[in-house]
Length: 91
Ligand SMILES: [Zn+2]
Image (cartoon, rainbow, N blue to C red; front, side):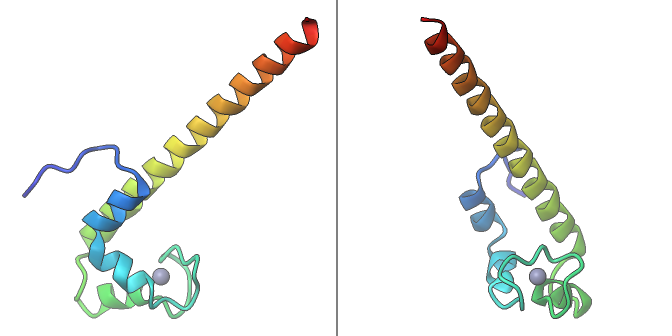
């Protein structure tokens, strides 16, 4: 198996997990997290044995990491903005 980089962005996540991305298009809800939602095609595929559960767990793990990274970036840029404004006010 090919090594997958620990940190990937959302687009490459969809590439690496192409079949999950395709299945999620069929989910009842657009913002389906494939965890608790009814009529979720991803969950159904796992139940039918069409999708490896370990793969889905990996997908969730990567998604969490990306979201965490995004939050961190947002926090950092907010902080940088705040500092910039504080400096401007002092002048
Ligand atoms: Zn779903």
